[in-house]
Image (cartoon, rainbow, N blue to C red):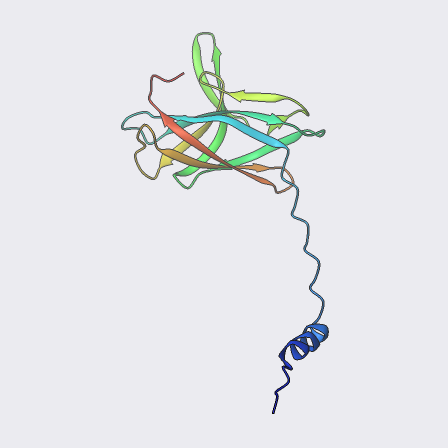
Length: 152
């Protein structure tokens, strides 16, 4: 007696009864900001550090960086160093607006990310994770390599 192979037709029937798969939801578009040359200046023995980078808005609308954080610091914020009458001072600089098509460089002596109360000592070559928060809820992950105090 010959046995009929009913498995393929049974499987086809089950597939026909299964609900159609929901179409995949499109991923939220990535913010049009790019970050290059991210680095951190290490200060031996200090509980603070400064991060630098260049931000570029490749979009057609202004972007605002409204905050920054790092798991390696209890607090992080964008600061600006100013020299007034020969005295250097720092003040908070949030939000940081990036005009469409423009780049903003965070560099020693100017804008920078100040990392306060580091959770551990940083060593040259370490990678420091940062997260930039943009107005509207988007977030941009950044990895900044630690450079020596003498780095520019």
